[in-house]
Length: 196
Ligand code: ACO
Figure 1 (cartoon, protein in one colour):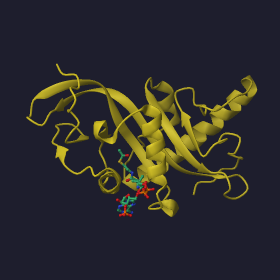
Figure 2 (cartoon, protein in one colour):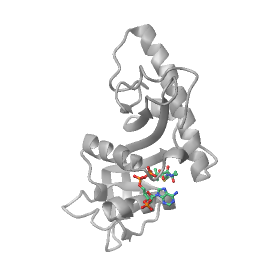
Figure 3 (cartoon, rainbow, N blue to C red):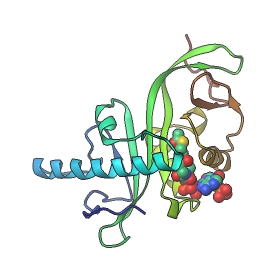
Figure 4 (cartoon, rainbow, N blue to C red):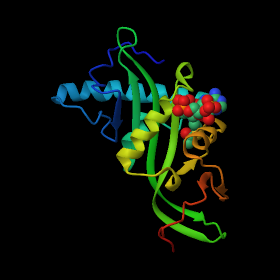
């Protein structure tokens, strides 16, 4: 679990909060001074969790940083916390999603341009809490909030653990080969997604 020198509980008025480019929890209400304080603390949380995720995936550079989120137009980070941990609460995991315009191969090998493709970009649950269903809770919250279905999600460089997760919870197994780093599952193109 990831603890901080400050109390995270004012930022986590619920176990899962959503953060976009303003670097504030979606539940946040406060004046300008409180806003500055919250964005600075949220940046620290995002940078730390992003670094831990990179370490877990053996990446040299984190996929997730506060600076990247600040510059993004259509990315969202869902953060999961345990406010009862220690004196200051602890952050347990992160899920970053977004939409991208991608050129993708369909099942027949034809190239299609798919606009606003839902993408799973980064996903991490702290080592001490993995395999307890918390990743599923975070993922389900994201799906409901974004109004996405798992089969319509592209996944950026999934790890073996994430492939196992998608198989276990959503029976996603059969992939459609791509030329880029994204993994798509059979059924992605069903129901007439846009093509060019
Ligand atoms: N080894 C193999 N599979 C695992 C492991 C593990 N250590 N941990 C989770 N899984 C998969 C398995 O399918 C597992 O089911 P099982 O226990 O019956 O085998 C299933 O996930 C468990 O589901 P949850 O408990 O809901 O998932 P969890 O809370 O562990 O979160 C996550 C899943 C985010 C993949 C987590 O394991 C993790 O942070 N892993 C390290 C970082 C990582 O690989 N992130 C994905 C990077 S790729 C990307 O983000 C696009």
